[in-house]
Every structure is written in C-alpha cells, then in structure tokens.
Image (cartoon, rainbow, N blue to C red; front, side, top):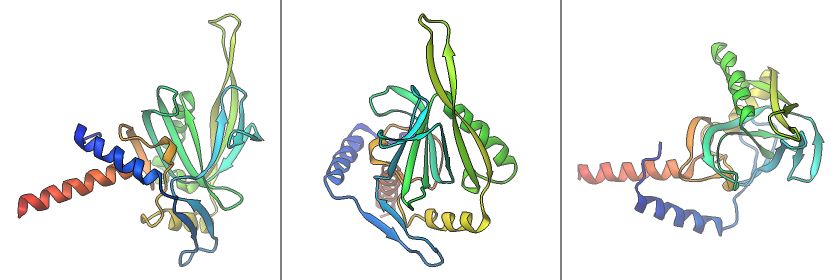
Length: 221
C-alpha cells in the first residue's frame, strides 16, 4: 500500500512535522440534522487505553474504568505497523463518541485484533459494519505456562448488540463525508499496512492521491 518513493516520504515527513507544530483544529460541530455537539481536537482524540498487563481500561493511562468498555464505533482501521515504540504488530484502532460527547480512540493489538475480525465477519454477512452496533469489550485473563514463573496477561473479547437506529444515523452523519478528519497523530506513520478502514482520514494517502492527480494533469498538458 506504500507507493511513495524515498524523496516523497522525506517531503511528507517534513510536512507532517511542520503540521505538528501548529495548534490542532478544534471541531465543535453541530452539523445540520445532528442533534448533539461533539468535541474533537483534530488528530488528538480523547485516549482510552486497554492495559493488557492489568486487564483494565483507562483514560489517558490514569483514570481506571474497570474490565469492560462499551462504545459504538464511528471510524476505525486495522493495520500492521511499528508504533508507540512497541515493534511491528497487528493493531485495531477504533474511534467513538464517549459519554462526554468527545471523539475518542482506543487501540488493541495481538490476539485482541483477531477477536475483532471475528466480530466483523458475521456483521459483514448481515450487511452491517461496526458502525451499526454497540460493542462491549471485556478483558479476559490468559496464562503462559511455558515460562516460569508463569506469565499472566489479558486479551480483549468482544460482543455486540444493534445500536439505536436514530443514534446510529446521527453518528454516521457526523463521521461520513470527510468534513471531520478522524485520525490520531501519535499513531500515524507513512508505512502502515492498512488492512481495512472506515471513515479514517489518512493524510499520507491523501498526499499520494494529490501527487498522482498532479502527475496525471502534467502528463496531459
């Protein structure tokens, strides 16, 4: 999926660094037909985290929420990348609106990503996506008996129920169309191998598309 050459990557990285020095765009949106106002600093969603060592969810690494998290996705991507100094892994990045009407994001990796794929499959055959359902993520304890002392870790299992039709329509209207650029700056790279995505804004892909368009126009001239 990475079609840029080294010079293009260097240019993009420079542009990205320049953009990072600027203040993020504040989106306090009340779009036509949307009843709620959602808060979003572009590229900086509120961070929910799954601690796979303790088996708890938290906000910004400090405010513990317990072993479950319930949310309705508005955007997502499943990808492979080396981010957050954790090496190359499979990741699932899900964006949602939390109870305080903030655009938020949560990351899962490893076996938890496999479980999300198991969630996507039945939805696909029912002509639905993650945006149509309310997901409950639950921390499940696992043990590694191949080492001594045995290792204990947690993965996330997922269940879902259909979302309220009116609420679902509202969330889709907010996220679709590109008016709101949904992504997280900290997890963004130009080498991610994206397997599937919905309503996710990728600045690097946008740059590549614009460069191809300019090249095509130049050739035609």
